[in-house]
Length: 419
Image 1 (cartoon, rainbow, N blue to C red):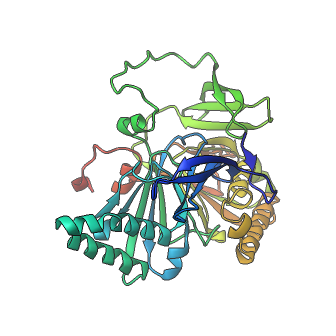
Image 2 (image 1 turned 120 degrees about the horizontal axis):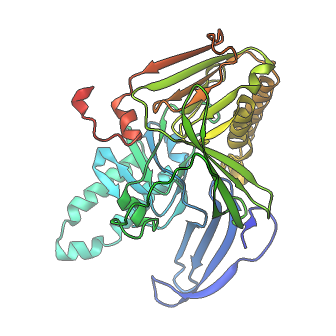
């Protein structure tokens, strides 16, 4: 049903529908396709031949992610206005400096830019201004607010754009990829029961909790859908004890239709009292065979490449160091959504290609780097090949979490004065 996004000429589905502007008949075109990051999407475009009104929307047809995502962008220059933004229908948009918020589920999903988000907000406020002026209802105050939005479009002052999406299906472009974006902060969060209900993931907030089962001696299997082709597949789940560490839950999915395989690891225990930062000096190709447990709350950094990957972007993994680097290369280079088609500039493509070559050199043992795993939940692990003796190339540091890190981990019972 969903075809790959390409330059091939194939016809969308056309449906006759009423124009919401002049109420005459127009045409809606629907295109079911797949793009990186969003996987399956539905692109709809309406045009009216009578009044020339047009409207374009996108809607995610893929699965809801395991965690919500929040993007905080510091807009400092006009170049920041050109960043591409994928905003899902479930995303809320805020500009704290103006005390302005567009609540979730009040706008359709869109593929736009930061400037386009501001223009859409201003156009929405301008829509009923004539009726407000006739009724003398706050028309002048709203017009003043629209002028403030116009000032932001000219970047007369710095401002913050926050996009918070409990479905995890929104995205803000990092033009410096694969390097860290100093102006953009990405955080993942656990959805609240109310957000689960809004997304249709929970029917009743007062459902009884199922009785806990002992998973240590059995492999559980349950039906699911393949994240690549959406065909029926099966997922196996097992509780495993890692030596010198703790219990983890390993989930493996295999699809018989397309052959896609994936595994995911979640911590089987509670969040640790302190965060853990593990630093490994990679000096030999044999380091690539070290076992790595990267939890969904762990970020990965390679200082020599000026590279940092935020927590939950790759997800929980139980693999080797080589497998982790391959996953990073696939995510940053092969599946980057903003290097395809018209979005892929020559400079950006060359930069990402060079980054991929450096990762290949690291995996071949030809590049001397440090790999840093930083997990505020303390649930990540890197194998010490010298155990039980200390590893001369690896350091493990425990640290006290910040207030923001506790917020990201859902530890909301802690108070600000504790810090």
